[in-house]
Length: 172
Image (cartoon, rainbow, N blue to C red; front, side, top):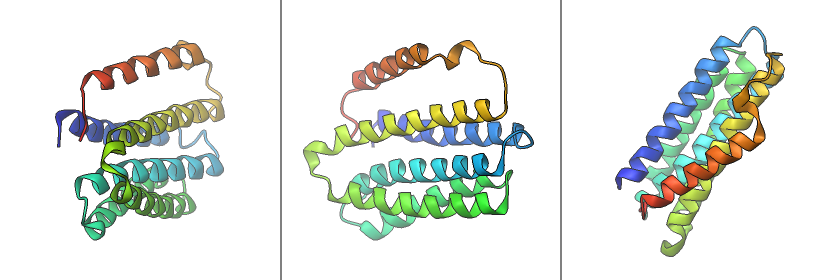
């Protein structure tokens, strides 16, 4: 495992924990449906992204990669759903299971020359999901707009992230 891949895994976990903290902070201001969507989005996106990474790293052992990815996706989905409701917990857990299974299967089956681009694509999709979750929570909580919510700033930040991760070289 390269340093860039380890940094990517740490980023996925820490951003998921950040969304958990934001959900706890705004739990009284967001609806149950929004909380369910947040839990589902975190469970699915973290599960599928980590599943792809673990499926590639443990290539040839689908059982282990599936169990690891399912557990991580399920735990993250559950944790984000706890502050909202039992339905959000169930929604997040099941989405994490589904995302982890799909990600590990995709990581196991992908050809070697496409492993690096696939990890980068999945990580970018995870980051976009986090941005939309934070926008949705802010919109639902009826908080005033802030500068970093502007789409142009978000696009610039993502371009810098893409360039930065491209500079790390190969991930696998």
